[in-house]
Length: 470
Ligand code: AMP
Ligand code: ZN
Image (cartoon, rainbow, N blue to C red):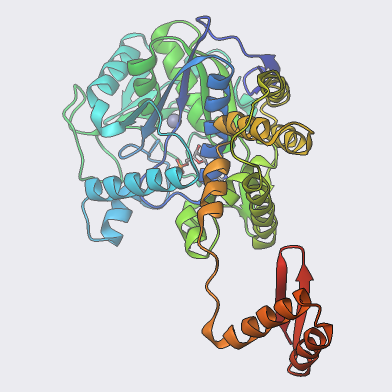
């Protein structure tokens, strides 16, 4: 597979450290609120990547963290601690908030067929690992204590900006959104590894450490959790593009400082989903979730199709019109699959041919829209229905649009109930059909005319007669 690598800034051949095995890490959700459909875009594309690697024969181990503590990176973070604010907003404890939104996140992921990662690790479960890492960084001269907190000294790292491509002159400060100055820092880009003193004093969760009672900084969790489960060498690390700086930049700095060697070879980043106000964001008020889309009558898998139709490295603009188009395309696709006859012989060579085509197309920097084209080509091909069904089943292992299941559901759905108020019309349609069968065309025409007078137009199709009312 070829993939764009944010670190090398080019499309590279993907070669894992150990042949046939992939160690994959994905930054998980910060659980102070629901994940919006922008977050879910990133997780859908990561899910496709994971499934595509498996489809291509790799044995993948995927780890995801859950940020239930430690999303602060320095006292420069403005506003309020989001976990504490979430707990206050809902009159719950921080852990109750975290558990509630973690469950809501994975429930929404399941609705768009995102596979549950092999390992999911909340940050609060790895405090000992973080303390070991921070201690090691101090011992190696990369960590320093100032104003009660432990900081990482970014000036000690060569190529600190290698991932983001920024220059030192740009004086990037390592925080999420807005920035205040943190006067404890030696360098502007330094960030907190461990807090004991913070302006966010009302923390519920604090742990003992060699530097006093406190809590971890934001970036350390992903290095700690990744090393715990995937060891010292990571093949691929994923996230949204906003994670490139400072989060992933700082993960690289501290992990490589601690390990003394290169840590992760490939960096995969998904561009943002935007709405009319710009980047969709959790702190921007009303949060549009997958569940809300479902309540509005959209099939969540139509949203998955919407994401797959465009390339992960291009920003995607969300609008209901665009989603309506994806929904119509999804319904059409399901109907097409539903029309395929069940049973019969499968042409295994053809299935393999389409499998290879799919690998070739999607394998070029995860081009999911070309992957969809391969699926449409198969449906148009002059192969048997059984072969088409087999191809759909194969490709859907990666696309995960639930096509065979949705088609089956459609086929087994009971015929729509006829509104009682319209029964007199359907009775007349049945009488007209019987008249035509008996070659009593005068009666058939009279029925059509009498209905037309009442504003009812009959439409004859090959599947029978329907009607519209004006
Ligand atoms: P968070 O829960 O805020 O830590 O974000 C979870 C994931 O969603 C991260 O990988 C972010 O980079 C990603 N993300 C945040 N906003 C967007 C967006 N508007 N579109 C796509 N991905 C996003
Ligand atoms: Zn992370």
